[in-house]
Image (tube, rainbow, N blue to C red; front, side, top):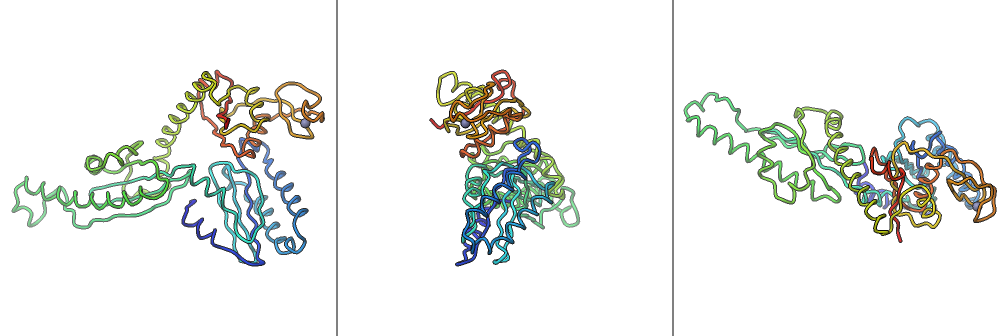
Length: 373
Ligand SMILES: [Zn+2]
C-alpha cells in the first residue's frame, strides 16, 4: 500500500554518479483498449535512450531492459496505474500497482522520482476500518483497493456473559455491571487506537463492523468528529482474514463512491447551467481539451465514440474532417476517441473520473469536464 512513510524513505535515496529510472505508465484498461501501453512504453524507452548522455545510458541500460521485460510479462498484475523505480547499481527495485491512472513518463535522475505518488496520496483519501468485539479489536487501512492491518487490540480479562465459579456470589445485577465495566475499559483502549489511526494524514472515512453489542456501545462513545466519518457498518467474524473483510467492506465503499459520483454529476450540470467553468457533451469537452482547460474529466464508463485525429499535432474532433484546422495536417479515423481524450487529459495534468452509472450524465452526453478557467 502507498504510504507517506515509505515514500519518504525512497525520497532520501541518492547517489552521486548513481542513477534511478522512474517509470510511470498508464495501464488503465479503459484508456488502453488493446494493451496500447506496450506501444507507449516502447516509444518512451526509445525517446529516453535518444536524448540521454551516452555515459548515463550505459549505466541504466540494464534498468531499462528490466522495466521492459517486467511490463511485457506481468500484465495480469496491472490495475490502472503502474509505477516502477529501478536502480541496478543500488540494487533497488520497487513496483506500485495503483487503482488510478497516472501520466506516462520516464525520469532518469540521481534520486527516485516520487512527486506524482505524493500527489496521489494528497488527492485520494484513505479509509479506516474497525472490527470490534467485546474483548478484541482490529484496525485496518484501506486505500485504493488495498487493505492492510494497522493494529490489533486484545483485552484478556473481560468476563463472559455466563457466570462461572466465584461469581455466583454476586447478584445478577452487579455481575452485569462488572462485565460492563470491563467491556468499557476494553472499548476505551480500542477507541484510543482508533483515534491514533484517524489522526494519520488523509484518513477521511471510517467503516465499523463486529459484534452488535460492541459496535452499539462503541458508537455511543464516539466524539462527533469521529462519528461524522462513519460511512457504513458491516458484520464480520473477529477472526476473518483481510481478504474476507475487504470483500464485505467494498460494497459500502462503492455505495459511498456512487453517492459522491452522483453529487459530482449534479454539481457538473448545475455549473454548466450557470456557465461556471464546466462543460458537458463531446464537442464542448473537445474544445476545452484543445485549449488545455480541463481540470477534471468525467466520463460514463463504457461510453464509446469514434472521431478523427490529426496525424501531425494530435488534434481530436468528432467531426469528419480531412485536414486539421490547426496545422493543416492529415486527419485519420480514431476508433477510440474517448480513450484519446482521457489520455490527453491525464497528460495535461487533469484528473479523470470514470462514473459507473449515472442516468443524468447519460442523458446529457456521457462526458463532461470541470475546467480550470
Ligand atoms: Zn493538426
